[in-house]
Amino acid sequence: MADTALSVPRRSPLSGAADRLAAATRASGGAVRLAELPFLAQVNVRLDAKGAAADAIALALGLPLPLEPNTVVRAGELTALWLGPDEWLVVGPPGTQQDVESRIRAAAGAEPVAVTDVSAQRTTLLVAGPRARDLLAHGCPLDLHPRAFGAGRCAQTTLARAQIVLVARDEPGTGFWVLVRSSFAGYLADWLLDAAAEYV
Image 1 (tube, rainbow, N blue to C red):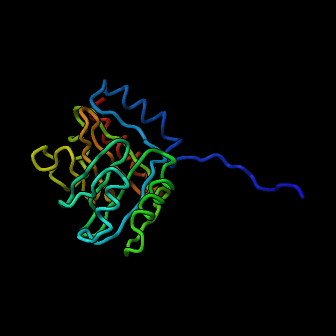
Image 2: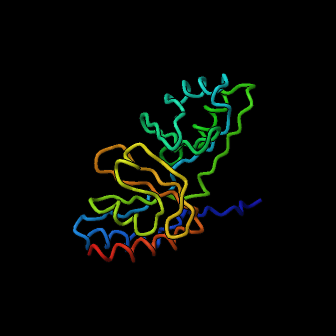
Image 3: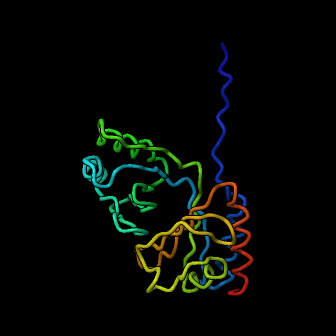
């Protein structure tokens, strides 16, 4: 019997916008840097933060789940985002979602924990450069001043009316991650390109 399965190469939601994002970055002279970070592993975790599973999962992943609202913990290649009192998003390099999910499940054992691979749900836009905060402030209702939303902070919010998870990265010069649903990625990229024209 002939194998009829077709191997379809993965396409990121913003594969068609990569050249325009790079051109805007060049045109701004580095004032803003825009790029897609496609296919990041994203695993949603729901559990009792005071239960036995939380410590076991932290040990298995090599990073504790943040307990302070709207904060981020990073260790090695993994980043954990606080989304709610019993909800986190663990973000890792592309292709690691199965490993992350299996490590969490194994560490949780019989404890009541919900683990869901949501990697295909969102893509990630990088917004960096000296004017990154100004650019985001055009369409985000949060106070993005470093005193209010500094490195290591995250929030579920909106940008240009699109629901996003915004992450202020803690490495020097790395700017922000904007995690947006794949279906809104093109719209948001167009909005960012339009708003970035001010800095060209």
